[in-house]
Image (cartoon, rainbow over all chains, first blue to last red; front, top):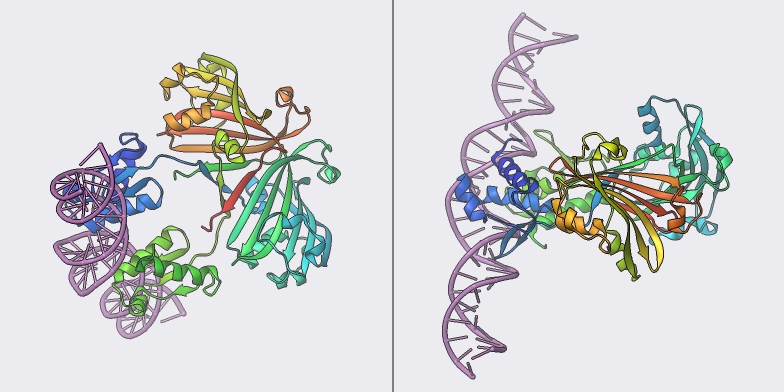
Length: 234
Length: 234
DNA sequence: CCGTGGATAATGTCTAGACAAAATATCCAT
DNA sequence: ATGGATATTTTGTCTAGACATTATCCACGG
């Protein structure tokens, strides 16, 4: 933690974050920093490399190292387990399974909107409702590829939410989300809201080693859920 | 790119991502890898350290290095400059400034919904409309703290969007987003949609070295904008 | 049976070099 | 002036060690 390398790194980071070294500014050469800190070049090099890996610094041979100009705004968004969210609020949580079916995905074109997501022949289709403190909180429509998660076929999802189950049983390596706003439309009754109420629709495609695992579409009434994203300085 | 270190790193990463080494598995010791690759320990160490920095591996002294269990789902969301988004679509872009005012923030309680965001006395208030291909695309309401961005007072925002201008002039270091769904409500006419149309509301608070810079609330008609988040395996 | 203390094995950090690669700067010949 | 060869500067990668740190294991004593 308080190694020389991390001291150098936080020294440099401080100069950058404080604005003392504005974007585009050239930072001292490794050689100069070696002289300044009286250490080996490897130590300085590792510190700068770590900052460069974090995108805070750009390095160009012969030219030197420069404070990176912030480019695309990226934020880290947390998409936690719904059961955990409710629990964190201190409310009672329940999952109601509304429908369960099984069959080939050929008839389901809803998941094919993303390239590279080709479900196998055996797909589990689940419809359910997340309930928080007795009130509907989120409607969920999910497809599970049974080739990727065979145990799902024998699992009782009438009480445990498939999302929670999957998290614990089928680790995944890649996911893609799409977030849109839409009207509740059909199914609004289930959420006990009007058909025109604005909702947040979160769609998620999940892979494990480039094999599709699950697709889920969740519908949150706009006034019951916020997505919060915290910027991580890139 | 094809250095020995990066080869070791991608070898290890491959074993992890493919599932050959499941979460919790112990990976070979640095010593074993040194023997396997016939290189110095520093090289192996840097490779593993890089993976550990990325959260793919957890290291415990004496015990060894282990494949990390995926914890909270986090996705990296891109919140790019609107002008750039439109341009990428190949559509014409325009920003219309609807209103401009200046004054103390005391009367504006809208930005204070986030802790630590205390605007100064001199605040620029801007209302505008992003227009893509002649159609309204996004309504924007923005506050700029003139203490943090004094040049904004003399900038003509009638054509350049304040977001684009700020990106280039006032680098920021921290931001927080809130994403909600809501109905268009008043102001729907400006977007040329119905008052009940579902919209995506993105609110962003931005700091620079823990000093507030700007708050913005953007309203996108639900059918004209998607937020896409790509999961980066943490 | 339980705790305690040392041995041990693993990672953490650092050094003082070496050579490679690449981008810029310089200078010379045309 | 211009184009191309050459030199120089800076980062990139790697080596073969050294010592520090710390969690774990195991043996020993109470």
